[in-house]
Length: 196
Image 1 (cartoon, rainbow, N blue to C red):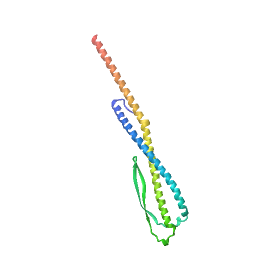
Image 2: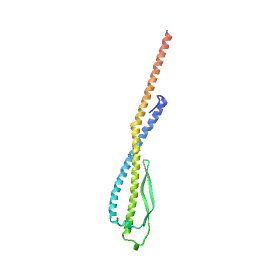
Image 3: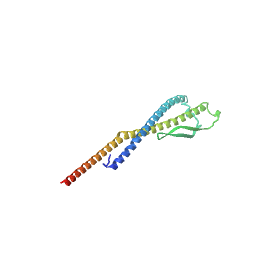
């Protein structure tokens, strides 16, 4: 850290230190909020993983039949809501709208109706899982940056600024003391010269 040993530099360092000291609690609160939200997101991912296993078990009877599934189901719209957590934009659960092609009940097999409903659940589940994974990644990166900034302020910059301010103050005090001592010596010499 470079600085000059004068009063304007001292004032600038004091301002910069005050900014960092005021920002530190805010950054700590942001880091805490991101950490808590990341834990919630990871818990939801674990829950989704368990649901995935349940869904796979439900799909096992249909594995051989999926090759015969007619293309009756398509996604018509996905509406994703967004929310902000400590300045990080996160996606929330999406509303998925499906388009189902109506086929005559006599022209299709009995399992197709149940298979279509199961396919809807699988698609919704995959979309939710993707959203949660992306949210977890965003939260992890934002928390990491916030932690780095907290550590930078707390362990590096605030001590450096404090140390620099102390050094400048000591230098200016020493300079002022030398100036006073020189003035006293000059004053004493002029007094002695006036007497002699």
